[in-house]
Length: 113
Length: 113
Image (cartoon, rainbow over all chains, first blue to last red; front, side, top):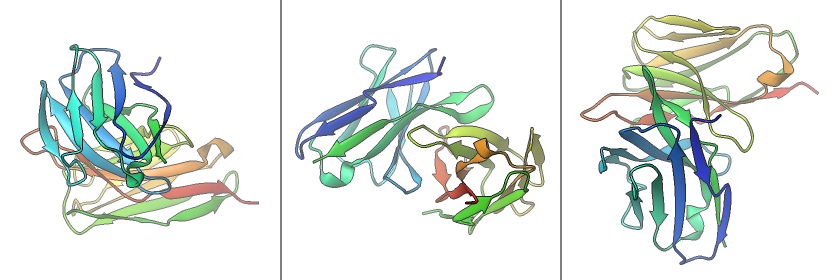
């Protein structure tokens, strides 16, 4: 059973629309991360989330992005007004026991048209 | 920001061959990680290295944390077809929070035609 489950696996959205990507870890974690990977490129850090607050964010994580833990278990990444260049795989990740960010979800493929 | 140079970009393997890839950085890291990514999946952690000079094995995989803390290599011995995929190195520095990963651009392993 995967440590982290992401939904949806694939989302197609029109430019300018809002999207919400979801991540559900098996067990409660205080630390949580979002990464993205544009097709054929490297994985890039977006944001880290600790104890219901953003602890670190990259330049990519601008005002169009937000993260929440709406109900104490799942985590969401929201993109308010999607752009074509937001098309990518989005991964959530959680730390493992003794390992940093050991477990990545299977990802959500976001396609903005 | 910090950048990782990963090489080679791609390589072809024949079953039974040994494979070697490496990552270098202009700045130091506290932790080096190696991940494998299969198509449409999230990165899977293979090996984590925490100390300069550390040599760690995981089955047929061996990785080393360079003594200068600016490089790492990954070796795969006696490759098999399921080794095909993209291998990413990642560096991590723990800051005030858990930190975030800087990924290399990946080494794509394919089977020799």
